Image 1 (spheres, rainbow, N blue to C red):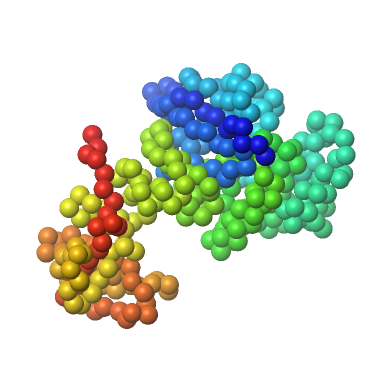
Image 2: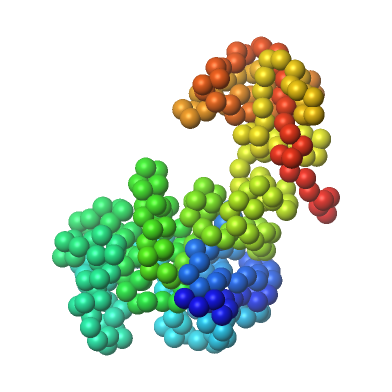
Length: 325
């Protein structure tokens, strides 16, 4: 696809409800073919953003551009976007094929059979097309919902927490499939989630939202390793706050002997050591009474409650922030 400009652009988007501002000046640009995540806690405005883009609600202020054209006043069916809902919203009385071809039939699309067959093959539902939603698994229902949206060839596919209904193991499997699918179809995905692992593993760019605003936009590595605010740092993973600096547990080292010169260290006492499979999580108490968490390899051996240890880290691993008002 051409990189002549963003396929989707939001400019100072605001949404007010009685007594509550859900969105407060949200701006972003999603390039063609991107996997873009809106990440944040419940109530931060990410689903409201999706609803405004889809046309289910009007913005109070600001503009929405799709392919360079302002679409604020267009009805949902006049916007070339498609939505995969959290509960999939499949028609229970229609088969998988019936659900997938529903939108095409309403549009009077020529070549419907071929198009549906291609999309069912794309989402690996060939042979399941005659089954009803109640007769297929949760992962297959998710694929059917994706197929129903993809068959319409939208400019942007909106996904509202589409993995939340799946069990943890299936979520990881479908997550990998979703990433591969997006790469194959080349359509811009705008993915809403409160799960930081999903956002970091799936997306090319992440917009972290908080209280109706975007706190930071960047590549997954940037927002995790170089967060601009304490909220972004804390929401994307655990942080030890030491003298105003943030140190992630995986960057917090622990040893029985004093660390080498040039590092920063504090004496501590081990409170407990938890086996997590791929690592050990050690909780240690500083002289101030503060608890600090360090992650270490299980291959290095464990620590015992009551042991005196040194917690240390490199200055380069500190997360530093300006004073926040």
